[in-house]
Length: 222
Image (cartoon, rainbow, N blue to C red):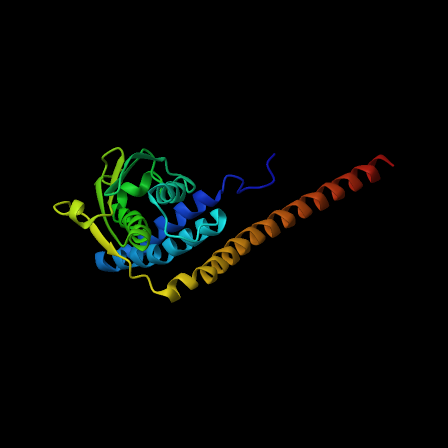
């Protein structure tokens, strides 16, 4: 018997559930509030993702196309997505995806595509000076897959739909990533510590019960 009733709770599942429930709550406040919430999360998260990537790869200079692509694919695929590169040149980077990181329920919240747009576009703008993100297809819109174009040249982006981003990330926002990481780690530790205490208490109670039964049986035999 599995002593851990939450053995199937993974970080990916936890985050999927957290984001979707957050969307449910935000939905009650209206479309604008929902979009603002997504944008706020994405703006903070993109800096954390990029700085983490830079620390792990020892990259201090601006990211080139190859490094940028490695970063955005890594972000999505490490949280449950299945993104891959379609094409890349100096004007546009195109990626495709066959599995949404937010799970099957994402079809109820197509607004979550804005988080992808903000993360991809924000990181691109910080490194290339400009970005426009066009989500041509998305699983959230029931297209069966995601096709995303990140234009890094304003002339190439002209005439295409999408959100535009420029390099306007405040320095303070970049420096706040360590504080964000600390808050996330603290919250996750509290979750697991609480669960471990519950498991220990149940195990202890079970052991005490077995001891009482064994003592009773021994007394009856004697």
